[in-house]
Image 1 (cartoon, one colour):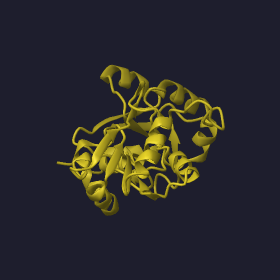
Image 2 (spheres, rainbow, N blue to C red):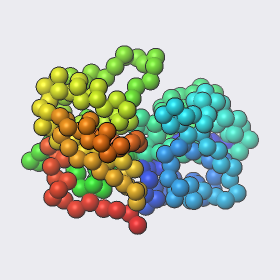
Image 3 (cartoon, rainbow, N blue to C red):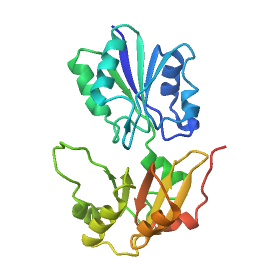
Image 4 (cartoon, rainbow, N blue to C red):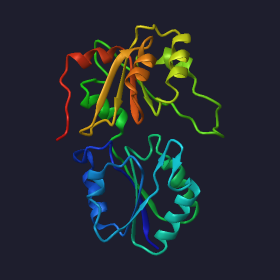
Length: 248
């Protein structure tokens, strides 16, 4: 019986991969990876390891979730080190908690190795601090794309709009018109700053800066596509002041 490691690959820049995660990739027998893991991080995998793409993108699933979990169980029964490589952090909108629970139920040893989540890294690379003494003392992380069959039917956008000075939205591009509508109905001003960051921390990182009242039209005009993180709040104003960073 081997062991499964749920490893966070970080947001894309290979320099943000943790030392522990990199070490596991170097000695892994099997690596089952997600779609958003960058090619540079995939190069860290032991060349003799079996590599399996289990990535999920909007409307395109390489492997169903239940198939992925069963595959992890089968590989752990025959290999010592099985890495489940997940973009960002496994426990931040990465279904890592679900996979860990299923592995534990199957009697498979499992360990999580945290990664840097894109909701923190992408704004940092764009020169947007999520907290600032003059602008924001609170941050909320929320998904903009909910799965069917959840414990609750929908995100409480009104509570989020009123409860936090900075809002970070994962996977929100496809539902952006609805999200903007809900936030403005909840009391956020149409001139509230918003930043969209696509492919955060990678060389191809793009930013789209606007306001709640104009951002949907900007997305359509620029054909700004997923994957992207949205940051809403006064901290976005710092984008024009603080330097951004592009990995080489």
